[in-house]
Image (cartoon, rainbow, N blue to C red; front, side, top):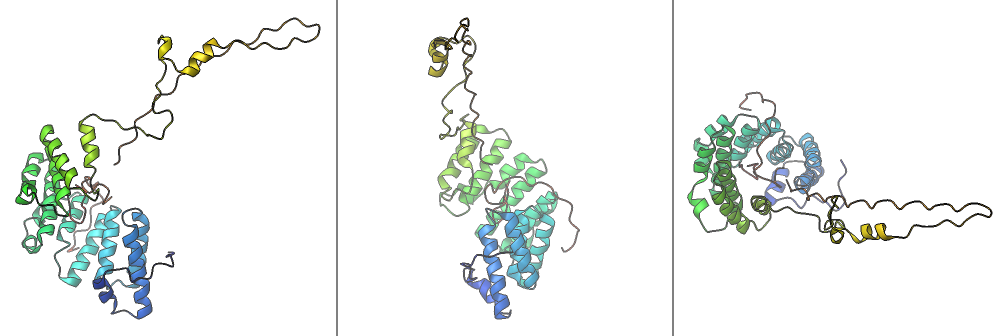
Length: 318
């Protein structure tokens, strides 16, 4: 796959470059450049990111960072079985538990929320840092909702981190997930309050809290650049004042008269046609992968082979 000339491979994290030092220099540079492309495209073009990740995998399948990158690219494309296998491989290579929450979320994506919930109770969770534990809580709450336990999902998200006024990278997502869980059980007033709190904390725009608030308030958006956005259709029987200037002019315009031909009788002009109404403007669509809406519910994929191989880790869906 083509790689822009400005991509050198030096853009990747220092720890990843250290992993690639085990490869021949030229090969390491090729792998690094493909990993840069994965990182660049993962949010906006996940399918292309997946393609670059597959190239990196073919070049260096024994590098943990490569397996992890392929895992996230597969995850972004809802290839949960493949993602889970790659995350497991990366974990075996590094011994790290930081991928535990996203592995659990893959179980959700595969339609196995009970496994995700079981992983939330494993000892590995206690080895996670604070951010990882919050991610695990989000995954567990999403699993509860997958299982039809909406009230339990609300309780799962109630935690000291949710009550804290301190703003952390995960604060907006945690508040958003709590608001969404409240809405699912019919607690609309509380949900609106927490969507507002999520919006206050969402400095990077990682959630659509503002759109959810507008939806609760019954606000519809129109395209401000649409020249017909402010015009309304003309209903039959409307008074003259309610009609557009063009429509009024059409009714009052004098009929055009054709010039008579020599020796011929006068020809009547055609009657002017009725002015048509302006079509009703539709509201602009509400914004709806992985990062755009991190709390979306997973679409169950095909069941993965059972090997050792709303709200998740590393920008989960709920």
